[in-house]
Image (cartoon, rainbow, N blue to C red; front, side, top):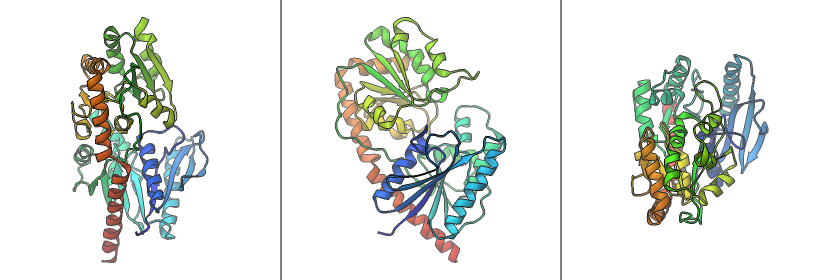
Length: 388
């Protein structure tokens, strides 16, 4: 085995508040270390981020530079981060740098002695386009420049690769499509039949589909009075800047409101405990690149309802290992939830089929090997081009 020395840029590495990029980076970084490789993670964090400036996480060396709150602090942050990565590459401490597409952190980087790989998780510009919102000019330019600077680029889904190539007018397609690895859990493979808990996980933003889910909830309660909606994720903001949680609670009263429980941000152990004990999980998202949350629910044996939008049909086969819905149709969301709540056979079938799909297609071991092959190919091709 040839040792890989990989550097990830990540500005949300756990344990502090993080999203899908942070989760995926941690899972892949730990898996690489367990396979005998060297991994370091570097990123820019606000001074208040609840994690040390340096730590070792299962052998992963994590360095957090602190970002100034000054209006132009992000400019200085980019310069600091590049200097550190450039020093590592010149000193021969790393073989490859991987950068997320979000915020375009490789924009303007000069050539380095190692290849730069950009992985598409869904950029700011991508999500704005998917949601039909104006694309911020500065973000678009940085993200486009970062992708064009990359020596290689890959994507967490074919859908996101195709949309991003079109959005940024990239000359060539991705060098690889690499699905995110999903941690697989033993036990709890059958949906909890004695409990009527419905789980949603994710930041409370309109993009995640929490608003149509809450709109659908009274119809669920009418059909299944004992049902409870358990929401896990940090609070987000409404369009007018208010608390999304407060807005959602204000939409209903009586039993519909009483049966909605908001737990805020919790650690992954508590989240997976909730998923293993739930009847089903629902994610009526409007825009995702890969969507780790529904696949984590499936890995826990939790019957899963997901969105027809974006990469949904690429990840889940409707009616076979999950149910797909239109997030713009609260009635359709409610009907899908009611089906799983009231049909034990369907719940068991989706639970077992969902776990099997994750095991076959998204297991950490299988995808680790694909990433190793990709990294070695990038390093080899880069060295041959540099030597030629």
